[in-house]
Length: 312
Length: 244
Image 1 (tube, one colour):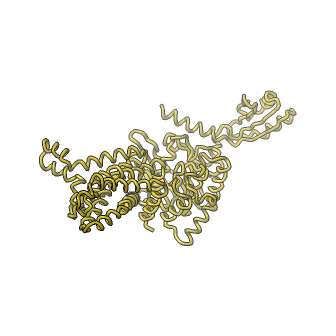
Image 2 (tube, rainbow over the protein chains, first blue to last red):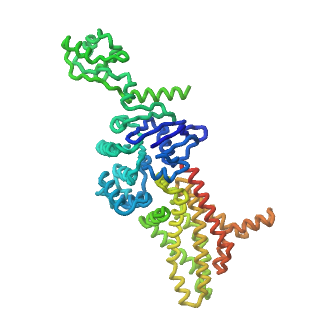
Image 3 (cartoon, each protein chain N blue to C red):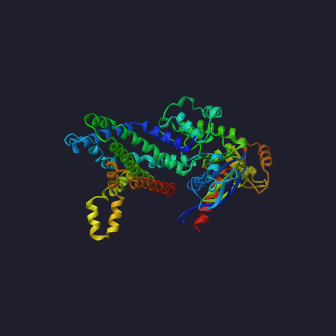
């Protein structure tokens, strides 16, 4: 549904996006992860046909965004960064305008308008000018605009940026509800969002595609993957108790919250051994957790490695 | 519905969503009246025509049209809505033409609201109404040319103020091109052909010809081509500048 082939954007000597290639199929919620300025937005702008790539190509539903821009634009919905719209208009007028440009008419138009207004809970603000709306409502108006024509491909640039936790939750629910038969690409630098909505994550930094995996696979790269963390009254005592387990590679105690983490040797499971060692020595533990892996740590190691490489 | 018509309607409505449109129309009407009666000596001339009315239109447009044009694209770029507009299923040309036509229509409306002076001159005497229609046509075409310049330059900057100043300067140069002040200067240093070419660029010469009732195809084409040229430049500038 979306393919990019060696998609590249250069500004003079600066390469904003460097040969990014990927394919996304319906049902996938693809998260673009990366630090600020990594090239996420530029990639999206090329996918939506706003910017022309320097080289490489992108297709949406089989239409090349440069050669058949109108067909590609018809097939996709786009929420640009910051959810821009026309501030002097009301959400009603704005959505009518979008509906007209999207060629919606008759009963279908009314059905779609009712659907997005309901989904995004815009009833209360329909006749207020967009300028006077809160950030959350502005973002929702932008989302409503993007999904109005029920596009097969949805591209959302930082859809939850600047929203409060409840609003973030709503937007994520909305994305999950639509995910079944669409390709959805979202960009974010919020890692919890990847967990909440994405079933695939692409890490971009310095314009390069550094990783393309499911969130679980990314977590598996973490040194915290399958580590065991626990909180004990006396962490030093617990550390001694665990010292004999052969499969443990190292044990660390967090200097701040005194939480102990035991890291396994590669490929080993240590949870059973740890809990047995603790109970046999009757060490009181208030909390014990098997870690899945920490995305923020993986994210840091992937993107920082790229920066070091870039400087060398 | 045709995308041009849809964008045109949205744009035209947006003028009236704020008081700016009304302020513009009032200023235009007041100034055109003041120029006609005080500077143009409408009554003193004792002639039933609108020559003193049309004579000052180039100067009026010099400041008022860039004021309308400055927001056309600068605003879209500043708010980021240009990204929304150009990723909807419309072509660049449709967007450029639709926004231009809406602004032109708005200026045309302001011009149409000067109709009382037409009635006045018909009550006071027996003017040649054909010349007056030609005058309105010339005025509208000239406004269109100013507007196309302003639209192009408003795409060059995010700042409306910069867009305004640039447009005024370019329009001023194009107006002055027909004046002896400029032409004499060039006559001293340049061959006659170049002097004629510069004089031929002047809005004044073409506007004056039309507003005297002489509708020459060349004068009409001059304005039509000017509008076409600057709108083409407008699309090119948007393409170049939309990334930053």
